[in-house]
Image (cartoon, rainbow, N blue to C red; front, side, top):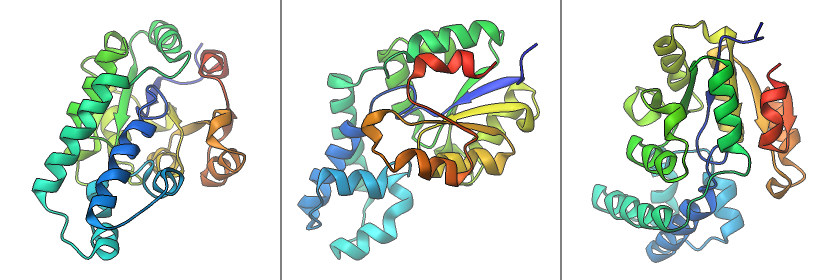
Length: 221
């Protein structure tokens, strides 16, 4: 018997290695507005968060309004980079296949990103067969992560109690969202995330930290 009734995955940084691409575009465009950040600083500030939700910070640091035209151009440049370079996280495709099989399709992708981006990435990385019809975007809900809305929506669509769900996340913001939904959160923290990342995820409430996506099917029990 499974320990859980369903498994809910974040997308960026968990299923697909998109964060360096997206944040590289963001860093370049913020520099064009007058806010110069290193790639490391940009990752630290924005990973796990929707750019639109950081409007006040960006406007304060650049002294310019964050217009809808700018957001459109950001998404266009981001999408070009993703189409050219995004890849699945090592081991993610096989892990998704095994977990999809074990849970008889009761898995979902619950992301803070916009739906177009999520679907583009899953399709390009060979993950769509395991998540088609079970993709949820925080952009389509009243609140995005760290609020629990996207995880609650995914659990409801699967017909399971969120307290019987395992959530897989790689950021503090995402872990907070999973915990707020009542789920048990597994924190993915590969070596390149840095020495402080596992402690940060544990501090946010993750019950187990793992470093290799190939470990996940066994960890779920």
